[in-house]
Figure 1 (tube, each protein chain N blue to C red):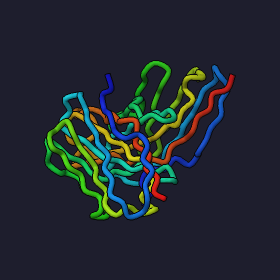
Figure 2 (cartoon, chains in turn red, cyan):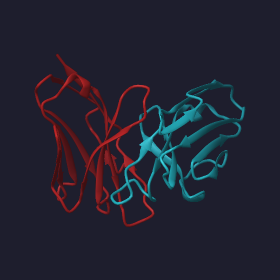
Figure 3 (cartoon, each protein chain N blue to C red):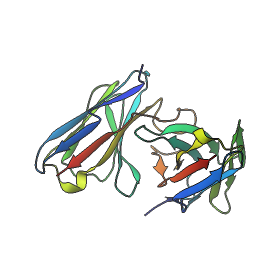
Figure 4 (cartoon, helix red, strand yellow):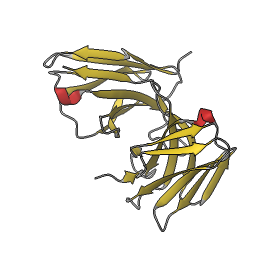
Length: 113
Length: 117
């Protein structure tokens, strides 16, 4: 049962343009959502998060949007840079339980020159 | 200075062998985890320890046994290795019991790629 889904395995964007990575979830008990970034041969690193009480969180070039009614979140990167090329994992957690992060399968972003 | 370090990074072994992967964190975190990333790229939690106490134990074959000698270390021992155990195993740590708000996000190690022949 895949509770967090990233339906686009890959995305290619030109440098300077906006990258939009999408994530859907099925468990309505999730109340905190995170994005992790992973380079080859490295572990995932935390990028940005959002609580379910918000619908937007911004950190520099990165903005995460949450649509609870649609159980959908997205990560926007503006402007995209070649160093953003990586795999991006969406993750969700129910903070009220002895909870664990549930990850999506990742989207590989390629930012081209 | 690596925050979460795992050894070995690569491990190739035969079916039926027993192997261990070690993990150490120098962040002073209370909670450590083992995640498995399989060939389909799913990152799934296997175990979690908080101050040496097992708090999450997913449906994992009992051939997998975590050991936490202290809160800075969480080792993973695997008995009787099978082909399906081939994966990348990630150790992680966080301050608090979950990778959510008020507890801090997860910090991952670089991963240990296990190949079972």
